Length: 113
Length: 111
Image (tube, rainbow over all chains, first blue to last red; front, top):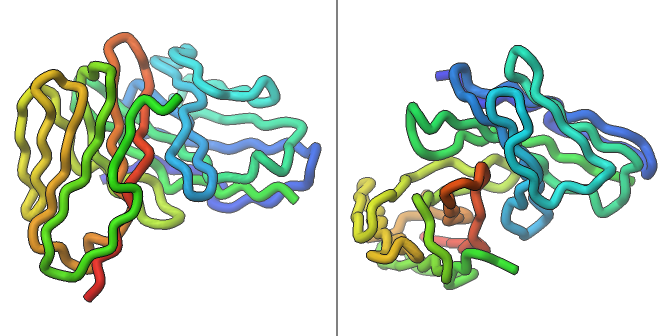
């Protein structure tokens, strides 16, 4: 079965650079979520999209933005990167009409040096 | 402020022992989900409980949703080394399009 695909798997950037993370949700899933997970921490919600419209916003810094495209894939854009942005970034998708529960991707490990 | 508190935070047990992980909140959730996460990977959904008092079994894992839909427990019988991992509860609130994750329980099962 198709899963949530994230790219790249690993990314190393320098301070003040920009990064773009991509997420391809499971077909027929109408909602996409972005989470940030620091070392030893639980995932923190950043932002979600329902049917390509921003749905909910969590602790997403103003330096970050995200969007969902017509093909339902989503991108998280991160600018003016800081050392503290180093974390695992997960994308998840769901469709409440099909089942409860989110399906998470394998994540992008971002390291800012 | 952490909406969902899990206990214990760390648990190390011998193979064959039983254990229970608790997930507590003062808030009501429309559903509660349990995930297991391996290092460097995304959380994998184990179960969703929706109805207050609901009990679900998944082989040696038993999940219960509190009557008031504010808390949940995960009981593992005869733990095996393959059960080792980070267990996360996550709550879903009506009107919110995101999951609130618990603080996590890191389980180590020693052979």
